[in-house]
Length: 242
Image (cartoon, rainbow, N blue to C red):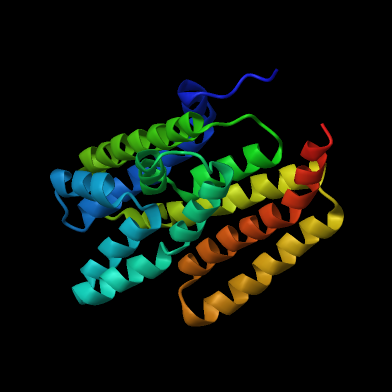
């Protein structure tokens, strides 16, 4: 009988994600401090909002004095995908308690969602405790990283000169490349090509109505989801024959 993965296994599985969060979180802290935010304000954003792209968007829109209502709506729309991701989690963990479901949905991110889908598709015996471990590890790393970046941010008064404000997009590009590399080894060529073409088309369309930063995020997320959906039936059939 296979051993079920528990909380600590989830924390260990989240280490690669956490390593990525260190640079992105530090970048956010540096950019926020450069925009005049204090250390405690950075802490509140990371603890209460906990949305990488949403946090970058918020400080960027605040810098140009955008209305609070517009900022709120923008962040809501950008993060609306989390509702869909949480619904997917309910299908993978259908018997969890309401308290567990709220905790899982609250701390879920694109990266932890991607890790959950990939592990589930490959038949790894993950549990709700494992997923909570992934989320908690990612959450704590993000908070610590943003605070570290904020603490040293005064040493870099103009982070945009070094491309630090592009760190979030760079992380998503890296995730897409790693996902495609994994798919090439395990999936049919048609699925890989579908993901590539879909991502390119989505990027082109999104780039017409939004900035290149947001377009890359949208294309990466949707492209990864398309790949997960196309590969799931095969994995399900395989699991059913065991």
